[in-house]
Length: 161
Image 1: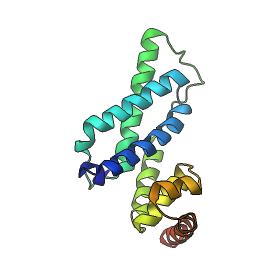
Image 2: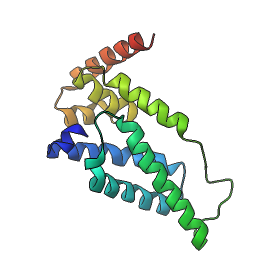
Image 3: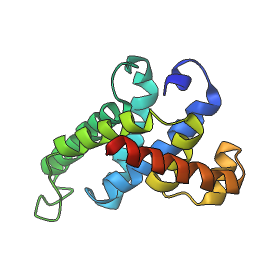
Image 4: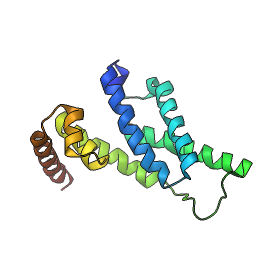
């Protein structure tokens, strides 16, 4: 996000791709497909319109999770007004405080890694990309992606303990 705010178009495109994957998973568990797609697109538009409001001193994970949560609430409110969605036990209404805190803590830990390790751990372990796709996205060889994941996870384990 910091690179995107500085005008790095490649970083901004990568940010949007990674957010798109994360938002699909986030809303898939919370909303029916059409509403989930609408919410996902609204968040991406909100990030585009409000990216200048992100402060580097605050965790990005908490910032994006808050936006996603508020867009989810908007979708649920719209559904209750127009009876598009039945508000029953199938719609998960959770307290996201723990998830936001965990995301912020994870962001802080990942921020202590080398950028090459952080990026491949995010792509492969958090976003579910294959080693080959992470290799293509980062420009690292597949072997280097594996090495950076291994070394990064080893350092994370040391930081946590």
